[in-house]
Length: 68
Image (cartoon, rainbow, N blue to C red; front, side, top):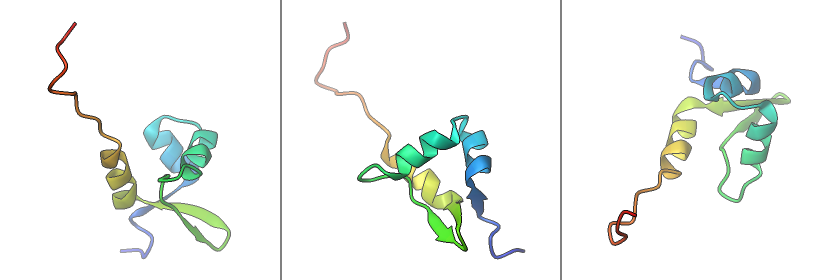
């Protein structure tokens, strides 16, 4: 087991999420943006943190609103 097993670099995460690397950079800059670690000049993303961030973006429909 490697110390960095649960981390992805920017190209790998972009491929996994099917977005551009530039999109990841924009998401990082949001006020509650994509969590990352800078290690030795490399940007790494811890998979459980990314999953938690995605889950926090989940929206639920408004139960008071009637369907159109």
